[in-house]
Image (cartoon, rainbow, N blue to C red; front, top):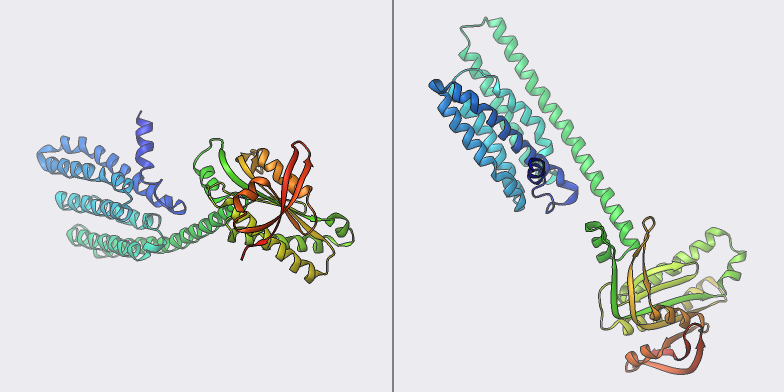
Length: 407
């Protein structure tokens, strides 16, 4: 139970903080907890020396404990800067009031130097000014306290002792400042590198998966499988590409496919299609998933016509004698993420198989669609009925050639 409460305390506010900067929130909560523990440890001593200043010390400890309980609550409400300012204010107030109360050198002013070293971890890069302001405050409080205690103990020490003691304290303060500077540089560099690597890994993930699916994978380990009542699937395949590439060197082959498929990616993004995968010289995309879209069939037809035009330009530029077959189908599908390693977002269903057959049973330089696609888009596009064809695994189906847009 205690372990669970401590875990909740330490992690308060982390979920709402940018992932690359969650450390300052955790550290703020941890320092607040440690100061509370130290304050609790002061209570027995305050009760023992009640006749002296114990009562006042008990009051200081109680104020410190009760106020620092607000730090994780403020972090939970995403008031991160306020939480850090409150923590530092209570920290300074506790040390000052304790020093003034006992009117003796208890060496607690060295805790100011500890705070200087901790400052780089409390503030993020955008709060650099705030970090150096508080670091300066801590150093100033330490030096003022040291000078005060030197003057207070002037009768108990010789001039040489006072000089060397003050010199040592000054050197310690300077060392803390230098350490803080170098720690801050390393922390900032680490945060920048972490942010860059996180951005790069997320970009790689988004190149594999749709945005909404990637977000679900990052926040949950549950199986991702969604049903879509209506979606459109597009398959494109380069005809006779395998014999054509026999005379090409590998770099030229990959370069040609990369150029063509990158342009297909641009067109798919332009029309709101989700690229599913490429396999050899085949390209697969879909519309209406993972986010439903009532215009899924229209978007696929628009994209297919532009793909056809782009392929003609590509052929002319590279002087290739080949063609592009495109097939489009509509219907209900199931989409999800499969695999543990090298996972992928894929689709299943009769509509997917039928769209694939539209491509494989199609003809070069033509776009073949199912009857469902035709019914959904005939008011916007010109079609020519091909008639009934025999499709493996399905039987006879009526198909159409998509010719052009209607003016």
